[in-house]
Length: 222
Image 1 (cartoon, rainbow, N blue to C red):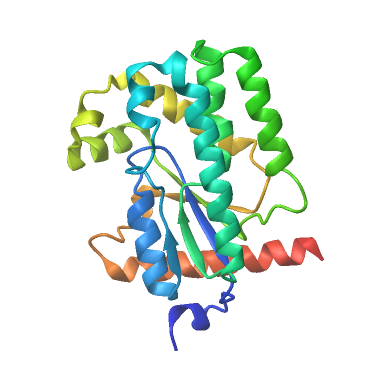
Image 2: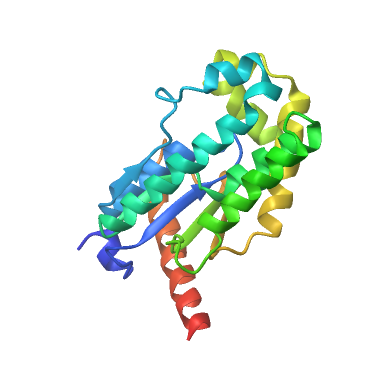
C-alpha cells in the first residue's frame, strides 16, 4: 500500500504549493508527487517571451508579463483537470494577482488602468464557481532569517544580487496575502518542521496532515 492509499487521499486530488522565494516549493512539489504517485506541474520560465524585457523595464512590461502568467496558469489549471487530477502544482495562480500585480500597482510600475484591467480579467477567469480550484493549497512559511539563509545556500546569482529589502517586502506581502486567502482550503507548513530534501521519511507526516486537512474540509462543505 502506498502513502496515498494509506491516508485515503483521492487519486484525482490537486494540491498546489505556495510561498515566497526560497521556501522550497519545487522540492516539496517533487517530494509529494513522488510519494503520492502524482504528476507535477511547474512554472515554464524558459519559454516566457516577456521575462527579459520585464527585468529591463518594469513599467513598460509589467502588465504584459502578468497577463502572460495569467493565461499560462489558466491553461495549466485547465489541463490538470482535463487529465483528471492527480497533480502537485508548483506555485498557484492566486499569487500573481494577490502578490505581484498588486505590488507593481502600489509601486507605480503598473498603471491604475492596467491594474484594473488585469484584476477584472482575473476575477472573471478565476474567481468563479466554474474555475477548477485546487483541493488544497499548501503554504510553506518560515521566518525571514530562515528564508534568507536558504536563498544564500542555493546561491542563484540573480537572487544573491537582490537587495535584502526586496525579500523583506515579499515576506510581508506573502504573510498578508495568505492571512486573507479563501479561494480553497489552506494547510500551513513551517519549513523548520520537515526536511524532505535530506530526509525522505519526513514526507509521510506531511501527507498525514494533508489527508486530515482534506477530510476536515470535506466535512465543512457538507
